[in-house]
Image (cartoon, rainbow, N blue to C red; front, side, top):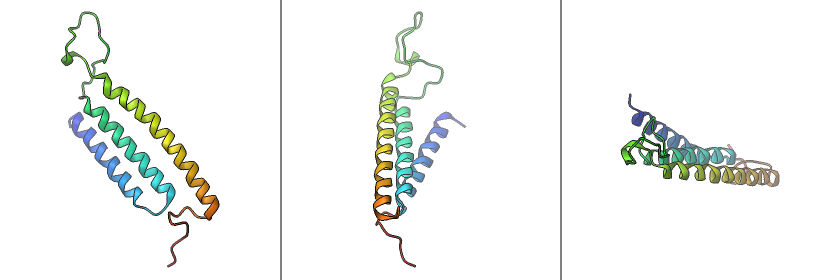
Length: 116
C-alpha cells in the first residue's frame, strides 16, 4: 500500500467521522466533530506540499538546491498555525458548551431533551 493511499484514507475517515458527529444533537459531539474535521484539514494541508519521506525542508551543504531534493516548508508552517488555531477554537467551544449546559441543564443543541 502506498503512503498516498494511507494518507488519503485517513483524511477521508477523519472528515466522514467529523461530519457525522457534527450532525448529532449534542454539543459535545459537535465539538468532537469539529476537532476531527480540523485534523482532516491539517493532514490535507500537509499532503498538499507533496509527500517526500526522508527529505528535509532545510538546505544542506553538498545537496543541490532543487525542489526534488527537499520538501516544501510552507505546508508545514501552515499546519503548525492551523494546530494552534484549532486548539484555541476547541477551548472556546468547550467553554461555551459548558456554559450552555450550566444555563440550560442539558447539552442538547436545542437546549432541551427530545420527548419520546
